Amino acid sequence: MAQLCLGTVQFGMHYGIHNTLGRQPTEEEVFGVLDAAIDAGIYMFDTASAYGTSEELLGRYGLAARSGQIISKLHPAVEGERRDVQQEIQRSLTRLSVSRLYCYMLHRTEDLDDASVMDAMEEAKSHGWTDKIGVSIYSPEDAMCAAEDSRIDVIQVPYNVLDQRLDDCGFFEYAKENQKEVFARSAFLQGLLLMSPADAETKVAGSGVYVERFQSMAAEDGFLPREAAMLYALCHAGISYVVFGVDTSAQLRENTSLVSRCRAFSATYQKLYGAFRDIDVNILEPQRWKVSL
Image 1 (cartoon, rainbow, N blue to C red):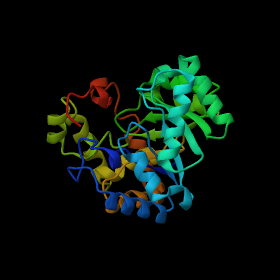
Image 2: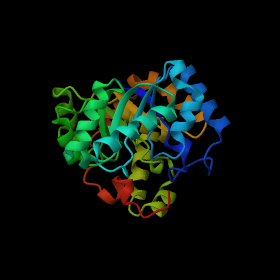
Image 3: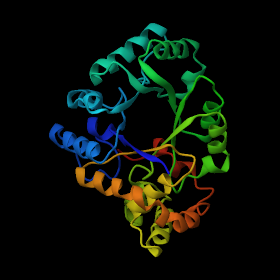
């Protein structure tokens, strides 16, 4: 069973098509969510320099003093010069008020082929600025490439009940063979799985029928869409951490309460596993959506 990692993109910018607040949370609200996370035993937090003010907020909160572990990512706009990459890492450390990260990730898979970038990443690890080097990927092809790269320790992948392509290509087995730690994001598919089928169809053409089928299958076994979507990722044997985002402390508590329900979800998991195949990538990949997030 996977552990929980709190994603913080929505703290620093308006994010997702199912943002329940309809706005970016205030600093007080963010600190309330972080308090609830610490109280619930969550110690892993995911951020990036591209996430607006997220790093600064986490720094002001003082996660390091509360034993929090932080993952951050290289800004995609940073040029591939070694010095530029190292300066960007230092800026993230300063904003976060920490001297060391759990993992520093590439935000673009093409940077794996940039010798200057990778040299800078490996130097950051040797200097003790980060314990691990990672990459955030967007496609099964990139996931497989990352899994065979000896320089990479952590791979963050999109994974949810509708997007089972990584199962089909054998990624999780390959990552385990190569001793990669796998973080899964987008369990709710940026909120699409939590919307009514009609609203989902309006937001992302062609998605409504799949959202309806998923929600119906979950309801048959007594699970709400949010519960089933999160549990589907949590119960996957190949995932170490599920990165999830919330708008409120109440939502965080709802999600953390699910950790103890994986055994009860096993039959539903087996029913959902393999139920969604050959879905259009324009539905599965949010970067292709023609909507305003």
